[in-house]
Amino acid sequence: MNGIKDDWNSMAAAYERFNTAEDSYSTNIEWPCIRRLLPPLAGKSVLDLGCGTGIFTFLLEQYAPQKLVGLDLSEEMLRIAARKAEEKHSAAQFILADAERCAEYVDAPFDFVFSSTTTHYIEDLPAFFRSVCKCLKSGGCGVFSVIHPVYSALYPVERGDAFPSDDDWTVRYLDQSRRAYIQPWIEYNDAYENRLSRSFHHTFCDYMNALLEAGLQPERIEEPLPPDAWKETAPYRYESFLETPVYMILKFRRPVE
Image 1 (cartoon, rainbow, N blue to C red):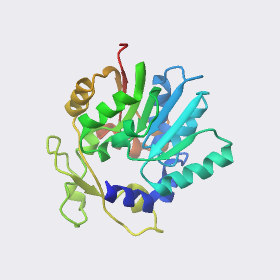
Image 2: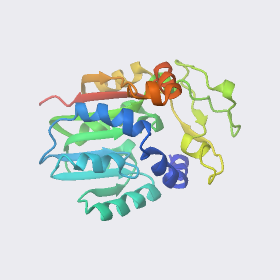
Image 3: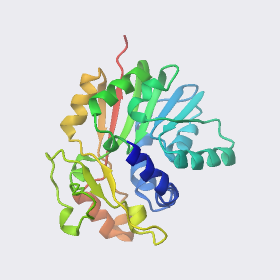
Image 4: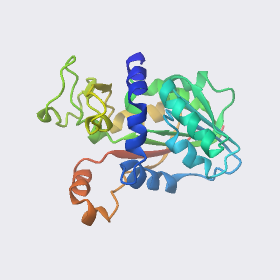
């Protein structure tokens, strides 16, 4: 986890620019689907796990929660989030902590737990979802946007410090090996030297079993499409996304006890 922390500290500014761009996948594909799945948040308590620079934290704040907490292990990501919070006069609170052990850092359960593209950095998925369950009130729900298992299966298998070639980007769906690759916000940014990021690959079965074993009830699963406008404005991106979808959105609930 220390390696992942160092990685994100070094990439924070590039990540923020890449994922807040008008043509970003986060803006055009991920958020519209998340928005449709959100429960009423006005007056509720909301926890954003792996909040990064607060991109989704501040979008969730538009729904008037009574309490809003973002949690991330990267000091640099949270520094950017804190600066944005000051500019926006936001009431969001930010905690420097490992999302994998989120229950250790919250003083009371929340009505709603959210996460975006964090789970593939977590090796022990069942333990993580058990911790998430402890963070939820009885009857509370969560929406997690995860890297689609088909897409994370495409990530090159780690081979020490060797950079992957184009031929290494091939689907290995049932291979649980750790993955190593160059993030797009680094690869297409001349201000940064290429460096490997490392993560894990979880299958659809892994996600479902981890939720169920944690005592969480899946309510809906979405695989969002790219916007229709991209058929004309960005046909390559549109077709590429249809071939290897980037996101799977999970809605789940802690049953009433």
